[in-house]
Length: 308
Ligand code: ITT
Image 1: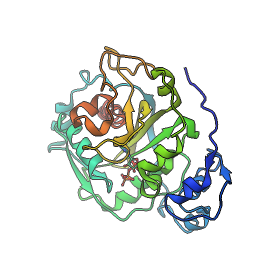
Image 2 (image 1 turned 180 degrees about the vertical axis):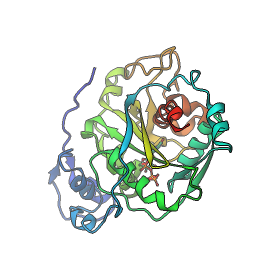
Image 3 (image 1 turned 135 degrees about the horizontal axis):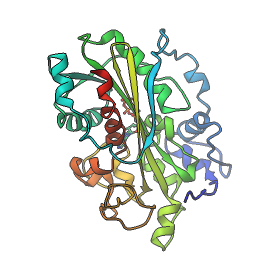
């Protein structure tokens, strides 16, 4: 069941005091998905950033046309039906995927995932422009387009994977502005925004603080692209944990999984659980069971026969 969280009036002085001082004493602003850029900017600087982003250009070439687009999946695709060895042998060398990203945490997770399928993942760092788009897929396809001219070997592939944290009570904020929000208000700021959402009842509390990670992975090879998507439902913790992980890992608790690996309803106890621990304190291997990224990459790999 989707619980529509109430709109939350956030004291502007709390938001602005995260990075700047503000003269406003009692003015309140309400997060809205209608204009998340302006909201992000209000959180960070107290001013809209349309002017800051107006000069950003997307890649000069039109993005490749997606040849296959699959919907969101909630669990890794079964891999047993795919003969990956045959696919690799067919092209005569170990397949390499160049992952266009500046985030080494994402690279580590992708390496771990693709190594199970004898596919090498290398990080491809390029100067890329991230367009301000309303969906992750547009952003990812734009980055693919920018990465294509940098492909070291024509037989190799390019991977872009774009993710975001969507908090229900904040109408999906930070969403596609997750990187920006992390750099500006950080995990501390996200916790402040929903600080008042709490309950003694565990299930109610979890629903008030409901959030999900979404990932869109796009793979390019030889002029064609495939798209895989993954979601990881969960909730925002009350505090920031110490430990490993990156990004929002220290404040995100994934929903438990049932015996088949599907997420159960928020706050319910499942077969597999982190027992209330955030992504930031569990191992990489354990995170893979829940991860939006793993689900998106599983979706991609289930389509690799098309590349052979
Ligand atoms: P790119 O260069 O690949 O764009 P990025 O760090 O900007 O790297 P994304 O746009 O995919 O990555 O992610 C948006 C934000 O969400 C970013 O700040 C990430 O750190 C964070 N994020 C993405 N996946 C995450 C995960 O699995 N755990 C925690 N935070 C995550």
